[in-house]
Length: 189
Image (cartoon, rainbow, N blue to C red; front, side):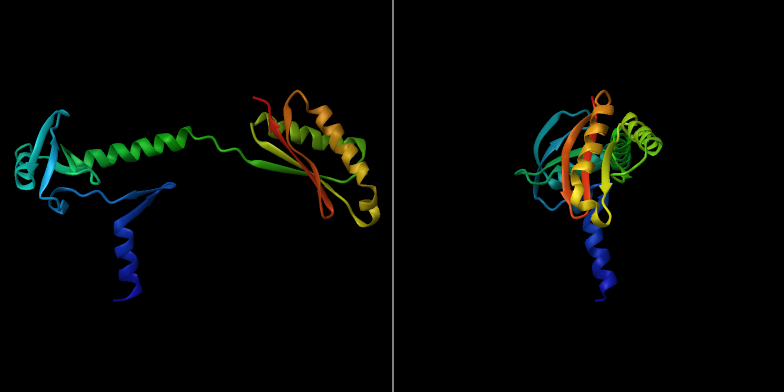
């Protein structure tokens, strides 16, 4: 057996859709239990019946027998149109993805000796990021001997906090990591 076949066999058992791993659902002849708890097309409980009888009822309805709860004893099976069920599940997954909001962290880099015009320019960027409901990571970069005066970088970060206090809240206070001092601002709710 080659690796490709093994990989395909593993993929057929577990499918990855979006971020969730959806286990393979047993349908019709793939159901292995001798008896099943049967649920009808309209959702009514039909009781515990042998697998052959459940398959015969599904065949009469011209629908599929789908194992809904395989871990239960006996397993719960429902008579339904499996193709339509898979389609509706994929639509639900797409709808959930569409409503999902992703928050990005946008970074703005400043030097401790940044001039006023450049500071205002960077501040507008930070406010725009916060207005788009993204987080803003402000990084003060120290070069050479500037690291000896880290209080200058702290003053710049405090000024940014004061200038954005209506739009932002400080999520991570300023901390020095090597030659960079970072702070994270999150948008106010």
